[in-house]
Structures are given as C-alpha cells and as structure tokens.
Length: 175
Picture 1 (tube, rainbow, N blue to C red):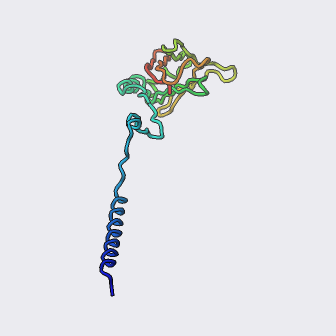
Picture 2 (cartoon, one colour):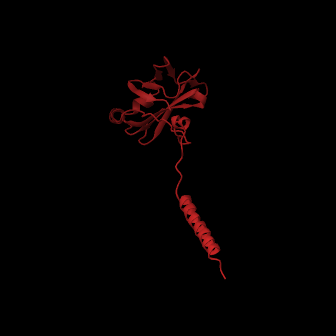
Picture 3 (cartoon, rainbow, N blue to C red):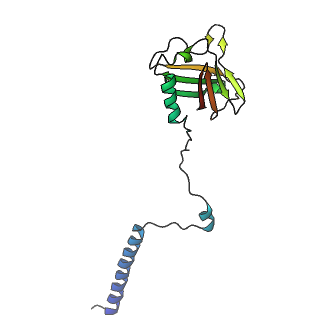
C-alpha cells in the first residue's frame, strides 16, 4: 500500500513547485523600476538624438506689413552662400509701382553689418555686369542681388540692413 508520509511530502513538494511558478510568473509580468545610484541620479537624462535647430525670427510681422504696404515687397531674406563669399538678398514683388526703386539700376545697393563694421556692395563683373536683377518689376516675381563678402566678415546669424536708394530694410537675419 501507500505510505502516507511519502504521499504527503510529495504533495507538499508539488504544491510548492506550483506556487513558486505562480510567483515567478507574476514577478516577470511586472515592469522593473530602475535603481539609480547617487552618481546616476546627478546625471542629466539623455536628450533626443536629433539636435534642435534655433531658427530666429526674420523680423516682426509689423515690419513685414510695412515693407508690403510702403514698398510693395515681401519675403525678404538674406542668405550666406558660396561658402560665405557671397551674401544673397532676395525679395518678392507685390506691387510693381511701389517696388520700382529696388530694381532701379542707378540706385547703388549696399548691405550694412554693424556687428562686423562693414558695408558690402554688389560686385560688377566685366562681362556680366552687376550681380543683381534690374528692370521693370513684375508682381509675384522674386528678385535677388548678391553682395561680395570677401574675407567672410558677415556671418550667419548677424543682423544686417539692406539699403537701396531710399529703401532700407533693418534687422534682417543672415541665414
């Protein structure tokens, strides 16, 4: 026959085995909480892998409205191009009558950077002429001019002014 002591011991071992399996499975279902040491607690958490790029506002909306109403232009931009040797000023014409002065060949354009203490001009090449678009402006058309930045004195992020005759755009940021 059966020995009750062996049967009781076997039953108890089997019950213990089942109970440990249940405990282990519930522990595995829980998410572990990380333990931070004092050195790890003083470190800052990791930042996103992609850097955040600071994009300054070109100029206030009020100035943008001023250029549109008074001068008939918008979308003013100043870009650092050709490895910094050229600064490109661009604008879009809204009202051709108001924007005539910007395209006037007789008006000498200049780019002033007070931070660098320089005044850049549009170079005139022998066979090409001035590096700017001129002529009768057309509504909806974008125009540009290139300023020589020899010595790379004007840098990205500088606040500059563009002067063409009586037109003056202040506080433009070089992109």
